[in-house]
Image (tube, rainbow, N blue to C red; front, side, top):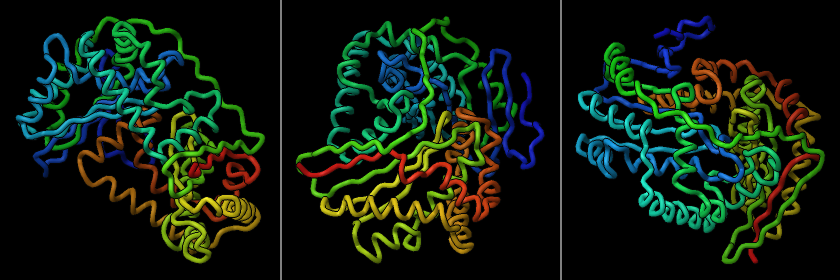
Amino acid sequence: MQLLSERSNQIAFPAQIFKLGNGLTIIHQHLPATPVVVVDVWVRAGAIAEPEEWSGMAHFLEHMIFKGSKNTAPGIFDRIIENSGGMANAATSHDYAHFFLTTAARYLPETLACLADILLHASIPDEEFFRERDVVLEELHSSYDDPDWLGFQALCQCLYQRHPYGRSILGEEGILLQHSPNMMRCFHATHYQPENMTVVIVGGVEQETALNLVEQAFSEFTTRSECPPTIVEAEPPLTEIRRLELGLPRLEIARLSLGWSGPGVDNLDNAFGLDLLSAVLASGRSSRLVRQLREEQQLVLDISSDFSLQRDSSLLTINAWLLPEYVEVVEEILRDLLWELQEKSITEAELTRSQRLLCNDYAFSTETPGQLAGLYGYYNAIATPETSVTYPDKIRAVKVEDIQRFARQYLSPERYAATVLKPM
């Protein structure tokens, strides 16, 4: 076992990182004051790992993991977690899938071993596969009733026309119906391998105990397989405004969404700068967009700006909820405000306020074992875990002239994707 956490970096990383001989990464942080332990297993096997014709496989597999293994029948894992007073869940994104449980420290040996068993040795029974596919299809159908989900997915498809980030994590019904248990077993055996996995343990368990438990539980992986090759094509820069308008029945409030792609983890300074720019735009009543469009002119019912850090490229969006007759005028005002950002620096007061908001949000998101485990695992899945502790200092280091530079470089008023949802 190799200790990796003593890398030279300016900010001390509070956990320790180990690499097993099989390639598995372990991140551990002992919190002696809590009797609770959180285990969060991250797998670089999100939707981006799917061949296009296997769309939706990663999310579907997330469901099937909980159907058990040869040694753990369907329902047994849930029963073990519930009987110990714990909880377990999972999530899938484009860049990763992760599976997490919270348990009392004394139940960790049993619950960790069971989680590892279903993760590493998922049997994916035929009958459970076809039964669960109906559940996945129902989840997909339910998403069609959510106008905000529809608007976001349409925006991603409009912005990412070549990269897999434009595809829905849930997949498409026609493609899902073509999936087979053998295809899923192949996907699992290809990607659920030690070099793709990180086990994060945070809470009331000492290092030696945690490492021994992980080494025992994650010692035997399924025989490797080889999926059809996944082609990830870089998205070329936008050269125009791409627009998509959708009419939805029973929709009362229109949605206007604008989106820009930015740098990924290969340029985190600029990516974090875009996060700060997003806060300048629309975080709180005194932010630029909220103040002008909602509080003063009352052209929108609400407006927000959101930033998502992704491995290959980040995503910044502006989203407005408004009456249909105001869509065009609001978009024009947004473009004018973006021009203003490029031509004139923001004030020091705006910058300080936004930095304070983001740093406070970060502090509030690192208070519990679950939050810490998620933070370390997420950053290790897309970059390095040490990056997680650099965020506040990188945000505080941004200057007013940097915000103007980021606006000029990434938020063009003439090159973006736009989706409009209006009542039919």
